[in-house]
Image 1 (cartoon, rainbow, N blue to C red):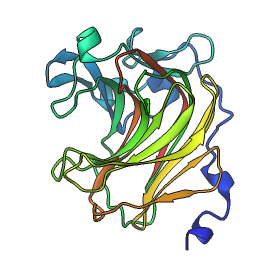
Image 2: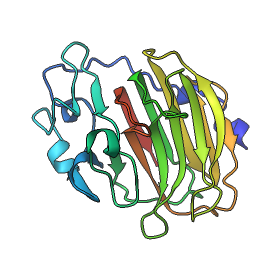
Image 3: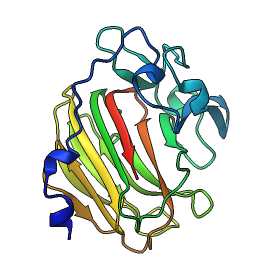
Length: 247
């Protein structure tokens, strides 16, 4: 029962009182060895990707325009300059939008029927893009061998509205959108996305778990993504203070 699994909502509130080192690259403050970083530079359909081995450690990869440690509080800052039309930024093969986003690679995919699959993050959106639902700050994506579509995407817009979009089918293009929270722009908050025991859910600031129908998806193998996946024409900026996956 979900009431048993999530008896202690504090377990889903992930704000950690850990000091972040302002002198380190993001990999010195966050364990990024299990992620690849997808950027909005490179060749059309083949954006630059930084492997976890290059992200790791205090001297790991960072770029002062897109992916770096804030010099004041140590936050991991992820920026996107806008859309391909407005800026010429590069997208992945099956997307029309630019991103600075981490893609889970350890494990490279997992079974939604398993006991535990969770993404926890503490973030602050300082600038959301100008699209209706806003910037995607976290998502579950169907394994690439099955589909090019996500299971779900967590959006944050310029009004501070947090929305979860869930695909109806593996073919994509027919998402159902549900408002799951509202946090003023520039305010730090926690979120957790879970997809375990074939139940999809999200919680904001350790509140009540909101479960969402996965429609006709039929529990496909999946993986997490987290970052700043811009959906509009204007720039977006997301700051991370904690990132963790549990399997």
